[in-house]
Image (cartoon, rainbow, N blue to C red; front, side):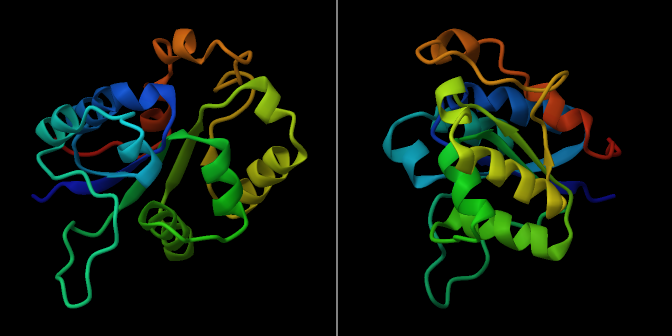
Length: 181
């Protein structure tokens, strides 16, 4: 029996360095995982690329394929965006798909795939009106944004590194349908 495919979209935020934890947990739950990173996550060295590629068994992708190049990953059955930055939330909610990662998550919503977003930003960024509008817009489009009491809450400015260690990766997997092993 083939495994269901989970795309994990990783943005440039502190917890991204530990994204292999999410990949390993998803595989343990029966998913085949393909990691797609935002260009900022790759260029800013937020990722442990060797760990992500070793745990997923797939290269980490961050750019569009070239004209005529075959698809590089199997089609997704579900998508998790974690950690999701304010920038990604705002661009995604506005329908901007100017990067590979944004294009994939915009398309996933249009395809009706289960999409889960687990944010990571400070209370200062959270107070911006665009952030609240974006969360509302994404939820109205069917995205399960894990934001609020009992899920994920913003951290005080300057405390992101401390909050990185306790980032609740498991929440994203807990709301996805269980997979066969």
